[in-house]
Amino acid sequence: MPLDFTTMRGVILAYSDSKELPMEEQQQRKTEGTDALSVSIKGGKGHKDTMVDLLVSKYKTKNPIIAGRAKLAGTPIVLGARHISGQYLAIDALTLAAIVNPIFTETYTTKKGKVTVKKLLGDENGSLIFGKHRLGTVVVTTEQALYVKATDSFPFKKNGLNEFVVKMKKV
Image (cartoon, rainbow, N blue to C red; front, side):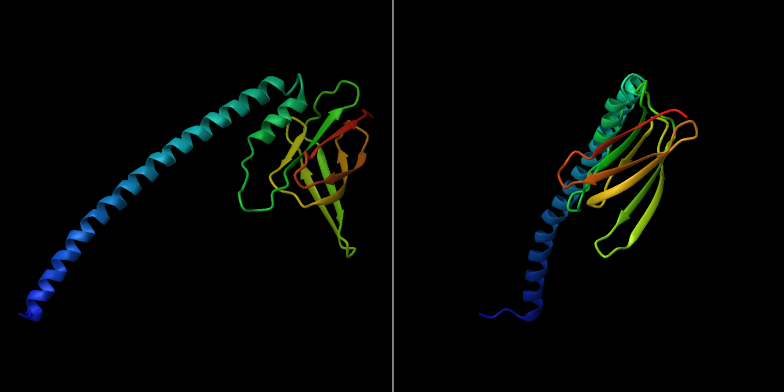
């Protein structure tokens, strides 16, 4: 005994409505979970930043290398991207104290002979941290008003510890 189209349409709509209700509830639960996760991640980032700040403030004068590593540890890593992180650190050759606001000038020559020059300003702890950097060797000239200009060559390596310390002598 065949159903007429109106009755059939009513049955189909009733089935569709009963199916959409659980789907809407599931989407709502996912949204609430995502919101809770976002709050948790934000709190975790705050705790990490506080720990990095504490380590840097404690060691910036006693041991600037440890302070620099703490800052490097606090740098987020972007997944799925080529990530060559690194750090330049300028210190006094005699006292090993950090040199405030050094200027690092990078000179990079490609295989085709193209020369790229970038001037970068270090922070009050004498360091400059890179979230990502190109592979290869760069020539770095470090300057600060009270010190003799220093020129060094540093190799940025994949999966390596790219921490470079520049020891500068006073004028």
